[in-house]
Length: 79
Image (cartoon, rainbow, N blue to C red):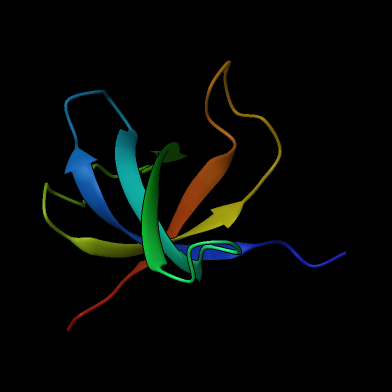
């Protein structure tokens, strides 16, 4: 099974070798027929502390690294 890759924005880089990434998803509500935005935060491993708050990054699923970390920062979006 392929590993999921998500795109999001770094909202915190205060932890050592860890960034918190906010991922937004949009969908149409089944009853209201309105576009709904939902966000979720993921803790991702950043080996070199290279990413700062506000950076657009891609994160990929991985084996558990710690209690909360199951994602790794793959690359930075230079947009």
